[in-house]
Image (cartoon, rainbow over all chains, first blue to last red; front, side, top):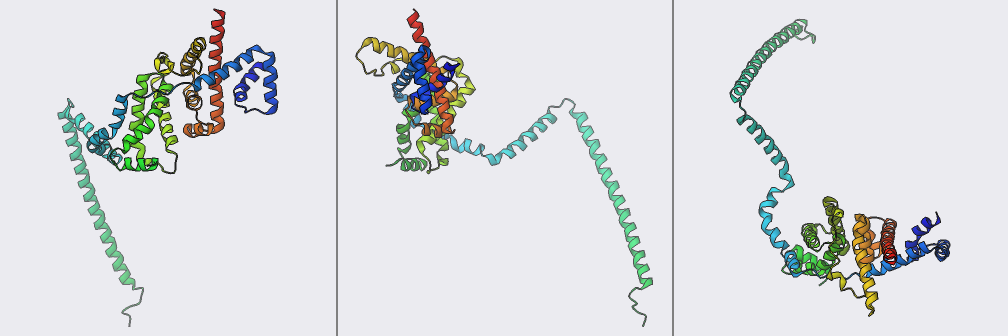
Length: 165
Length: 187
């Protein structure tokens, strides 16, 4: 519909921001169309009314509050400023996790069973480590024996021909 | 004393420098907040929030920038964020109060004055029907009288976008005014 197209152009028309062709189109249409002419008049009136809105003075109580902002910030900064440091956030996170785990342990109704299970697991772990250690000792001994026999065999072959003079 | 010196003195905590900034900009920020939120009480709270943010952000101010535009951007961001957070659009604006009635109409004709006051009331309430971005752009351009380029800098969008937003807002307000006029003619 032509009116929709014209109404889209009206705001730009009042700002003198249209091409010559569009401007002529708006003007000729508004002569014939009371609806669009009325909207154009309302647009001009709205601009004038908005421009006449007065500025209001802020109250003295507000100005007083605004003036005191640095005082409040300075008073709060030593305590809050330290705790709000971004570098401390990982420490706070770790502490929170630790405290959560601690509280889960201390407030657990089956704490004794939990202790027993932990102790059992701990001792199992210890004995597994001891076994591994013993196995590692055996492996070391075997490797030592292999090394000796290799050394003896090499001596017997005497690849460098030393001592044949 | 120029503005940069006042800002530097304020950063150094010099006596009176912060108060100078408050005196220079509180009225502008308060009016922006009042025109945007439509409530005197909200505007006071919002102005305070903006100045608290300003105090915190002042050390980051780039002296190569226009301070006024930078502060208005800070204010605009806060006002729109708060609007989205609290959904003010569901609330009514303050009554068309005495603060706005004192606007000079430039005429001695009481009937014309009455019509002008009625139009102001319609537009004041109509601002609440505009989406936040459009409302802010209309306020900055049409009420505060800023140029498109300044509004674009404050809103951090291209000039073309600002023009389109403002034109949409103006047209919406004009339709309200036209409808109200037609209704009053019908009565």
